[in-house]
Structures are given as C-alpha cells and as structure tokens.
Image (cartoon, rainbow, N blue to C red; front, side, top):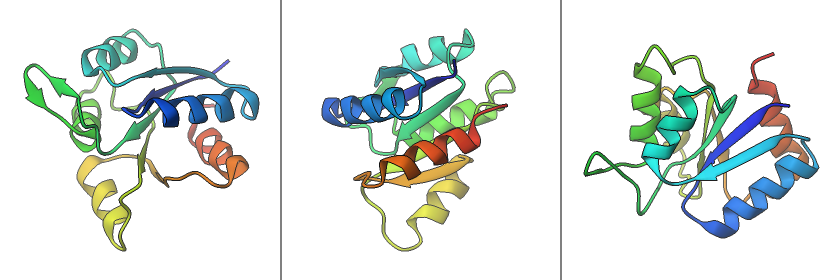
Length: 131
C-alpha cells in the first residue's frame, strides 16, 4: 500500500484529506507540519508521495521559518529525495500562481483548496504515484 505524506498546518484539512485518501484512494496517510519529521519520514523511505501545503504558518527548519515552497526546494535539491513526487496544495491561487509555484519549487503537481471533487483529488495523486 502506497503512503501519502500530508504536510499541512490546518488540522481540519489534514483530517479531510486523510479521510478522502484512505477511503477513496485506499492509500496509507501520514500527516505532519513538523519539517524535521518530514525529513525523517522521507529519508527513511516512509512516503511514496507528498502533499505539500504552500503556506505553512508555524513550520521552521533549523531555526528558520519555511513554507511549502522552501521545503519542496530542499527535497528536490537533495539527490536522496529528489525522485519523490510532490504536489503543492494551496488556497491562494491567483492566475499565474500555479506556474510560479511549480517553477519556483520544482514540484510535480498542484491542487487548489478547497478540494471539491474528491475523486479528481484522488486521481491526481494516484497519477503521480511511482508505479
């Protein structure tokens, strides 16, 4: 069973995403906004794909505040973790944001909140899962 790591600072979103992915997607889910924990999970091979909230209000790494873009850049620039598909999730989607976020971060995909179409949400994630 594939594991989705959800990096999200809103407990309600985390619950909703987890429920959709486990019930509809048959996927295993882990969730955290703790960047050290994200790194531990990823480096130990504990995730097959990451759902990354762009605006993480409380997250910091080694004493510096970081958002989802920054964490994605760190993961994508490390040969150990660069292969891992990362999907950005954000509520602040203006025209052009999507391209900017993808370009800046090196992420593999992009989902806007709120997630209305649960099946499409699952399909987007499954499509990027390593076979």
